[in-house]
Image 1: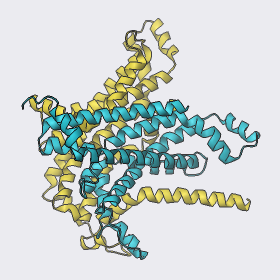
Image 2 (image 1 turned 45 degrees about the vertical axis):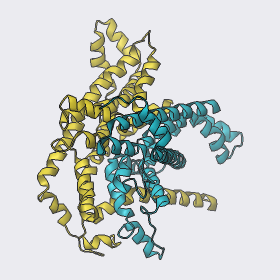
Image 3 (image 1 turned 180 degrees about the vertical axis):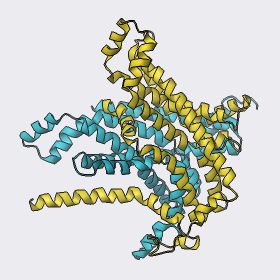
Length: 282
Length: 243
């Protein structure tokens, strides 16, 4: 190996590792801080046992007086994320399939698709107030239903686009031969289209679950007590008394971060596919 | 509620200085994060498009910030950026550097928000660009290097033009999402100091659901929507023209 090439390799790895540290540092700090006592959390120490004695109080505190509130919020988040992503998946697949296989005459397919994506341009703050008023009139403020409806609304555009791309990539011929053999259009969709694009469906589900889990503005505006989601619940704790209690902030934040990460790591292959597909074609 | 005609819009455009300040900050923020994330993402993607050991491992690591809920990211960084107790200033202190007033100085507070956004969303740019780089036809590179082009020349004159359509899409997607800035402001700075980090989303939220001035907030929403649409369309047009 020549000298110049060696420098290249070294600087390559330096860049990779610096960026890894930059990416992982907040997660690492959160884990370390969550095992500290309050007084120790203000000192820059990083290695348990060597630099400080680990304490589990921030974690056992999760089972304290706030346990009921936190577990209810966690269940709310799981239900809202799970159900809304499921609805998004079904509606997104059907409309993506329709946009990919049928030719619309009056409004062109491309126009419909662009219009659907333009819904994503709308900042949540813009529609928050009208949706708040609607939910109040329907009398479903602070329920799962109101959150599920709004989460479906803002996750659907991306899902339709991803589904459309997946179906565009599938060769039409397989479905056409099924149609000739006497399969109905819906049968061809169910028996051939869906199974062949299953990896794409996983991507749609994960992405929309992650967005629904992390969604904040609608959750803050539309719920206040019974249906409050986990991120909103813990934020109201931070902004009140516990703001400077770093170990508590860390352990609660880690609980909020874990579900999407647990989904993302084993299924990262699909997630990356979902992130890139629309972009690759430009 | 009473019908007031165009009074709210008149107030927004003529009297409401807070709106103009927030609009300026939002535009500044969107512009900075999109540009920084694009260049960082491009650099990383071209690094990781080489084949090496553990590539998938690093790809998963780089993906992690995106999956975290923005409000928890805000909570974490708020903790790190505290001027007296935060770990970043403590680490700087270990090297004998002075304390930096991350969230209490007006300019630094803006920079802090941009840093956090870059931390969370560079991975998005990077992953999308990496996939694009990997789907490029290899023959073009071979042809260019046979013709004697250096690596830099290939990157500047072959890769970038080929990537251009994807870059447009990504810039647009990121800009649209950056306009929605709310959680970081809500969690880290609360709009302060002196309203210097207040985004339009945050202002609308305050007007509508904190002050319950719903009519005025709805008028603000309309203006905001028109700004977002205007910027998106002009980005799309000006970038398309350069092709």
